[in-house]
Image 1 (spheres, rainbow, N blue to C red):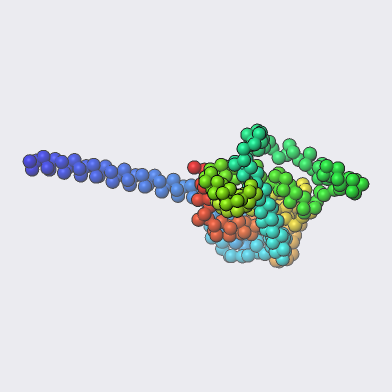
Image 2 (image 1 turned 90 degrees about the horizontal axis):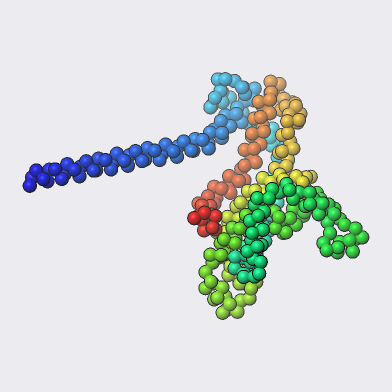
Length: 331
């Protein structure tokens, strides 16, 4: 008996050692992958920080790799002076992105509710058309959209009243009209998200609303929409990020508008590099500023541009993944 117990104890001890080794190996592999992925993602940012905080005359110095010899904020000061000014442009860009996102949320929610909950003839075909727009490049619609807004008319009513069509290109409300018509930035995806969410909404909610005397629109506004918070937050986040960084619609339909994304793309074009370098040398008395200084200012402007997005992310990052799962994108 003692020999058997000793043998069993030895066997159990061996299993425990093997299980512990497996657990340690699993953790080593897991944390190696996590650290490797984090490094691959953060490496460009880590390389960027010493550049933008470096003295512009020390840029290109092979002795400076991670820590600047002399810290300087000249790159940020120049970026603010060149592209951001008094900050009004950023505020206007944020206002534009928020307004368009609210329009997209409401229009996409209505379309998604109709496609997900209302049974009507041709519903699947319309949803197929929505899905089809995923694969149609927006550039293929550009000419027809541009001509429609260049000679804007609604069922001939504008011509009837005004005597001719009107040109609404380069008007700020043109972008709102595009969002109202469901052709805003990635709006097909937003309709898909709402459709998937509303499709999974329990029938009991609508039945209870019907018993309480709610009609179709009241059911949508009072029951469906308040329960669609995960989808609303998901679409709101994506809409804000994509509209804030949009250069396609703003560049074609309102090129003179006060949008920060367009301002940055116009300011830091290669053809403007000599003017920017001349400004840096003159404003901050750095005659040795070269093309690396131009790149540093450009990257500093990009970091400043990202601040609102980072603020939004850090405020709501706890809810992002949860809302993505509940809105039907994943899972």
